Image (cartoon, rainbow, N blue to C red; front, top):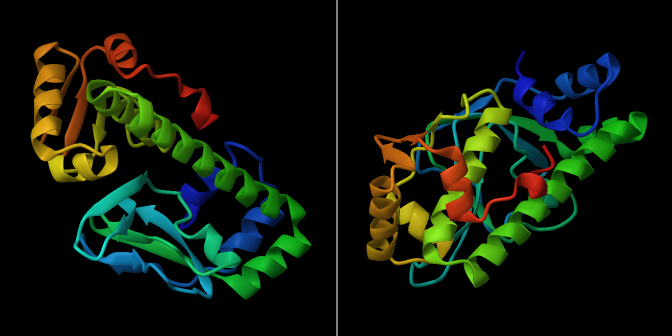
Length: 234
């Protein structure tokens, strides 16, 4: 089913009826495909459609005029990449981390579906609130956690989010980021990020190479990251 990743995200918080599922399915045309490195959402856009990530991974970012970039989220299948675009111009970009497939939901038809099926609006609102909760946790990490805890915390988060979408068994997960991506997400230099990764490996907590994250000691990684999953509302 084309929209299965979206349904899986929504139904973690608001079970959908067959009619509600059909109402969303009726909105979608053929998915669009994007290569890694392509912007799926442009900073400053005022879109007329919502984009849903079906396959692949992506990241949200803001970039300064001199090219310095802050990554503010990593996206997994089922994420709606631009919910704020329903109401305002976008103030961030979203870039494909890997090759991606994206479904498009036209705003006018989506809003009509919300009116006909109010539970759909509540479900979209719920995932928007959880995005905000994740963002607050990231802000706490950048502002108050050590570099060591930041890296460990991010890996804990991604293992659980990918597991929720059936893309991880809780031990292994595809997470094809570079050390530069990690640095841009966590407010660290590339040298500092590399040093922390070596420390986590040396302590036997994880393996991270070739785009695959392997957690060898989950309790130890949780402790290293001061990780409490409550903010994910899973």
